Amino acid sequence: MLTKSQAKIFFLAGTIIFSVLFLGLSYDTHVNKHDDQTNADKITPEVVAGKHLWESNNCMGCHTIFGEGAYYAPELTKVIERRGAPYVKGVLMSPTPWGEHTSGRKMVAYGFSEEEANNLIAYFEWIGNVDLNGFPAKPKYEIKKTK
Amino acid sequence: MKYTTQKVAYWFFLSALGLLALQIVYGFIMGFAHMGMDGLHDFIPFNTARAVHTNLLVCWLLLGFMGSAYYIIPEESQNELYSPKLAYIQLISFLAVGVTAVIAYHFNWWEGRKFLEIPRPLDYLVVVNVLAFLFNILMTLFKGKKQTTTALVLTMGLLFSALLYLPGMIWFDSQTLDSFYRWYVVHLWVEGVWELIMGGILAFLLIKITGVDREVIEKWLYVIVGLTFLSGILGTGHHFYYIGAPSYWLWIGGIFSALEPLAFLAMALFALNMYRKGEKKHPNKTALNWTLGAAITSFVGAGLLGAAHTLPNVNLYTHGTLVTAMHGHMAFWGAYAMIVLAIIAYAMPNLTGRKLFNNGISQYAFWLSNIGMIGMTVAFGVAGVAQVYLERILGVDFMETQKEIEPHFLVLVLCASGFTIGITLYIINFFKFGKPTDEALVAAS
Image 1 (tube, rainbow over the protein chains, first blue to last red):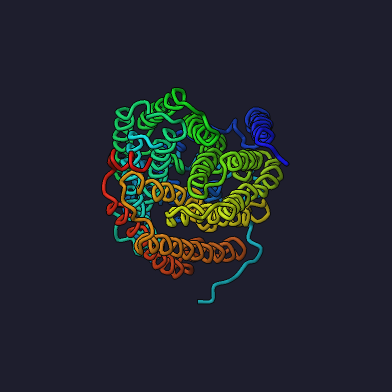
Image 2: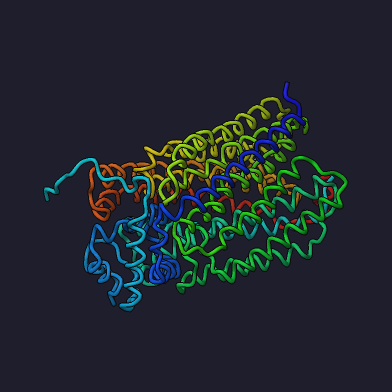
């Protein structure tokens, strides 16, 4: 029958072993694998400026990127591939809430300057080229809207 | 033996319930917005409502954990709290930081990283605050007559929570690394060290309510927290599948996160077994309901519903959809909200001397909030699965998919109304207890 001290050893040994393994794998991910898998050499000052804008406006509070964020507005990992840069730029620079005149949801009118919009597009372009192990998956079927 | 400084806990519990009430209000704003009714958009856009909703959750749970520690540690260490004055200062400053952050979110001031939206200058204040809390708890333990396993596990959970907050404060130019280390905080909190806190509180409640021998309960506490770390640490890998991290995380994360329900299953079996073995003489049936409820619901919400979409080939389609919201709501409710409500239900009669535990209002509070939460989880689940099939499998546009699943949010809001009535009854009962008194604590001893 398991004693309390054996249970304590199970807890302490398990915690230490798995913490060490986790830290080792984290080190490998960060130091050995990250740069190649994410094209880190393409993280330009514009991409970094875009990331600052992404965070300072809490875009993740409605959208997802890499599938992370909120589920109120579209996934943006491949937004440049899906919509094209000019469309995205139009949304970002819109002086009125995007979607106001449609039945869809409204986006806050951030009214970004051209430079800010370009930085965000540079950020999305970098994001779109990161190797994400197959995410987002291509839909298995193609269906047509009938009405 | 009871200690008069335990009454500090009351003010933490009161504040926690206040923030819970506010969290629910913002939840409704989001629910209506998902139904296409976003009339408040110009004042409270969705990203504000969401940041407030999730951050208030974290704040009230932390206040609940701190209140639990202020109640449990003096009793376990057989010593008055080191400094009640420091505890009050810490509470007021914590609330000031929390309220400032909530107001800031309405004026576009935040860090904009999921769950860690709090603006950076306020982050430093949180760190100072938590250090003050830990100092108070550790000094109480250090000067106490006993250092029990229950107290040590609870304290260890709180200490690691503070340490793990730090990786989330590092800036990375790369979104991949940013996300990678953000999960050090978020995952290792909720699927790691917070389970220590939950386990500590659960063990304390089981010792008090069932009367089962402390040695037996604490032995199993070690096994459960051991299982938590055995699966939960490498289980962090399920957040690394699709963020630009190496593909070995797919199978490491898959295997270990599939094991994560084991810890919750052990917790549920442990609680039920201790109850069966116990004397069943403790009069506070409401605290018992919340305690056993927490153990069972956390297994369903955090364990089963998490496992349902944790394997990489499933998660490839469910990642970033409402399926996550389904799991998240019941997991947080079962594992953390219910255990905080359990300790409050247990502590209030002892703090105030009023035996309002088996009245109708506290029973309705328990059942209505739980049935409401189960309904909300089902509504999120149906909406999430429909979203996955329409958008991810059939390739329907995001916004068109959202229009199709709007009716499920009506069901969500209706169930949330039942949940809200339950929580309102809980809060009314809390106020009926009145304030804590030294006489009550002495009498309870």
